[in-house]
Length: 135
Image 1 (cartoon, one colour):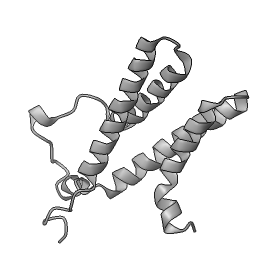
Image 2 (image 1 turned 90 degrees about the vertical axis):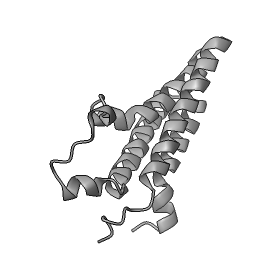
Image 3 (image 1 turned 180 degrees about the horizontal axis):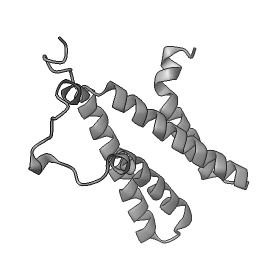
Image 4 (image 1 turned 45 degrees about the horizontal axis):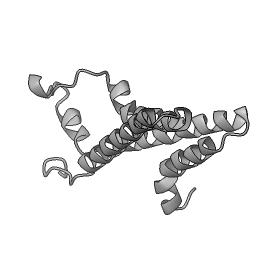
């Protein structure tokens, strides 16, 4: 069993090590390792987030629960969950591959958007449990 601090930061370690591997790619296996680490870190974070989120209790208590029409999201759930990680990865690739300033600016904006969405989801999902869910 992993120590709690290592366990909690594992997805972040995977993603940052993947970014480091892509910073100085020297071999195709290094790039492949970075991609696998990034996907693993993203998947670990998504699974933990899905398991720990307090709003999942609403769906468990009332399986027929359906949010109001104006609050439904159009994207399929798997695509929605991967979106911030895809923005981060695409922005990082744009920074590494594109040489002109507009492309690098777009890469930075994509990374900023991905990090912002990731942070917003984390903060929203880690709010205090509703009173009904604590029963």
